[in-house]
Length: 121
Image 1 (tube, rainbow, N blue to C red):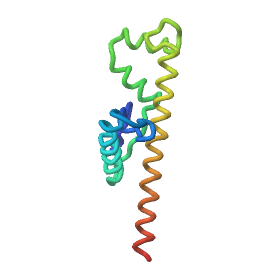
Image 2 (image 1 turned 45 degrees about the horizontal axis):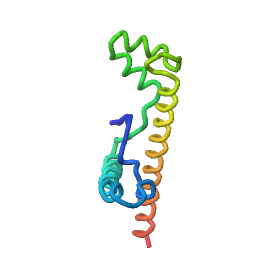
Image 3 (image 1 turned 135 degrees about the vertical axis):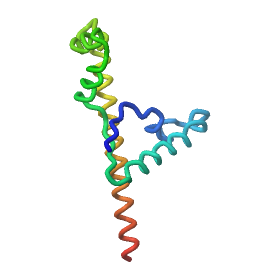
Image 4 (image 1 turned 90 degrees about the vertical axis):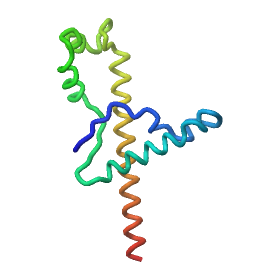
């Protein structure tokens, strides 16, 4: 099963990004629990997660009304519902999610390697 992720919202928040105060007090545990959930999901055999890509957005838009599809054909153009700013921000978020998921995978691999080394010692 491959989960295609369009947004992770608070899961990507770190305590460093939250700073001090109420925001950190309220959301740090939620963000940590979300990251743990992703790691547990990704650790299951046959499971993968990845960020959305252009082909995913094209598929989703293909399920929309004709007017939305027409606007999407004009994506990146001024005046389009999917204007230049929207297209740039979406691409940036997709890249951030891809990097985040890659980092989670790398952390999991490092932890598994450390556990194997400890067991062998």
